[in-house]
Length: 316
Image (cartoon, rainbow, N blue to C red; front, side, top):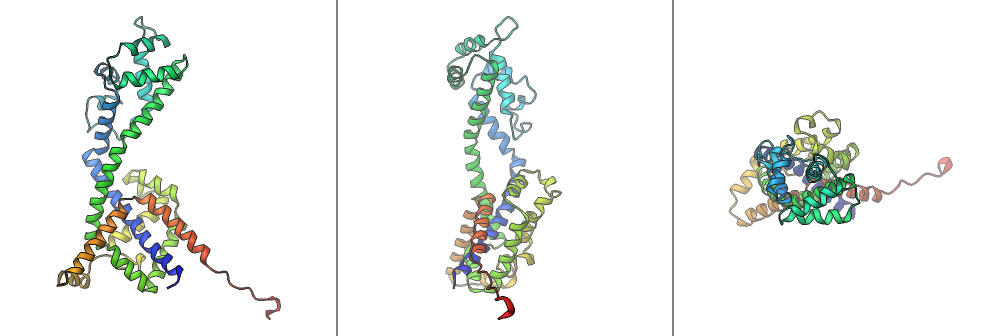
């Protein structure tokens, strides 16, 4: 088998992983929204960031911040504006007790805070900023943004675990077996050609930016976005096992079910389970990863196509 065939096998696996990842992402959205997972994480992160009860009470005066400081995860959104939080925090600290605001009051009020994470961080920011409320606000905004991003890594790891679990359920429910799929693509040129053609059409119709934007778009509006149509078509190809994926072995039919259920050879079950686990592990890497890899593989495949020899002038 030549190297081009191996690239086509990799293309087939990658497009299946991409479609399955998109499908799992959609399921994750429903779960996250139903359980308010993002809101819960933000409430915990902000509580760890602002660990002073008096400051929390003052910041909760803002309707946009109130759900986060009162721990109302049902009303808390999935995003908090670092700039708004910084402006409210600096405004609270800059009050000089006479009804006015001043830069010197910020330093004095920070010194009066009880010992804690908030006081330590703000003292460091005061030292590195100039005597300007605007500069202090910008520095606090950057600190909030960086801190929430780092604290949000726990949420991302937890979401990756959830993705693996859902990916395993999807892989077994739709019989997306990496081992069986690799074997079929390796041994069947027609199947490789079919899925390679479909893969090339997907990469021509969309790009990495579209994938990222579609995943951030609300699930109800996603169906109306033209740039999301190819991706949703890929999800449908995985879910419904339509003709777009050709003759690759995805989904259950009477033969595949009978072959596995009636199998007396335990090895068939072992290989099937391993194949589903491999699929779930691949899906947990996320759709952006697989789309980037898909584009790299397509570029490699294009570079391997030999140009046709030109006939000399005069037809000789």
